Image (cartoon, rainbow, N blue to C red):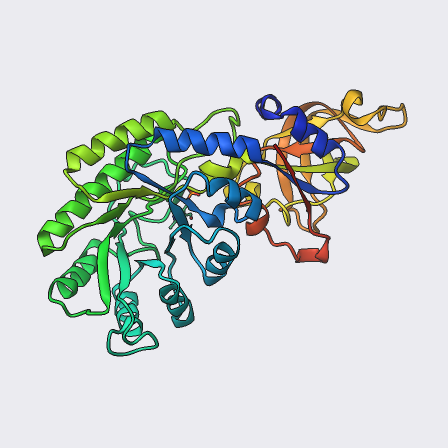
Length: 407
Ligand SMILES: Cc1ncc(COP(=O)(O)O)c(C=O)c1O
């Protein structure tokens, strides 16, 4: 039962913050994040760089904690770049993402950000913008780039989100990367400082599959360098480490991944700097979304618990198609005596929904609970990644959630 897994993770500090919250609130556990990031860092082979994919959660307090553990930041917009410069300015940023505009590219070049190039056309545009003889940065130093590649991946890969190995807007096919390789080797792009290869092929992978994709990328990058006689100084093998929303207490096997990645690096025979760029698996466990049951109703034989807030704050379960694991804090010791006889309660399978006027506003569907009642606090686990920032906040113009920090 999902609620059992989530309950095991709930610390007294998070429970207290959730129980006393006034309205829908994200509670972030900074101590948990600090410890977890330390575990990730120490599992990686010596010299491997750790980037955090800021899109997973750009909360400044989380970034400040992660700043103690990461080597840099993976970003996908000018907004993220400005945000980093404001809150954690000291570490390098690496800018991926399809469809970068000239304004974004220029801002990145001006800030000295390394670009993960998504197409041959984008590479030519960067070369033109970077100079050395033309464009807004004429005379400035060259643009540092990694080519982002969309490599063929095993067809049976159980990835939850695939960005590569199939037709996609992300990265370039190997043949297009070869066109770039030939142009770079021929010195046809003087504004470009070629640094290496980047691939982020899928998300939601276990340690074995993730290390398998890293192997694939490492070998491909080394062969690309040999084929074009280009030095490969950096290889970024991407993020995508799984978070299992059905088993909230489970964790990606960082030790196993680190061990396999180390073997893969040795087997590829590369002395390039190797990077990973996880997002979800870094911050998911540090965030909780707390709210209260406003109404409880039985509709055509099924129980619905209607909570304040909803998927305009936490779109994760809709985006990923899962039931967000949760804990019901109906306990008197936490909430005081709320279990009066007039308080409607339900038990058994309950669907927890938000306040939006759409049948898609479902946080968890038909999940068995011991008891849930009007006024109970419901705390959703694993809400620290792709939670508030991927949600459609303004739909119906409800208030935004509060944020609290513990630890
Ligand atoms: C280029 C890139 N790198 C890293 C990530 C992080 O992926 P995850 O959160 O699955 O680790 C993403 C997510 O979409 C991405 O697009």
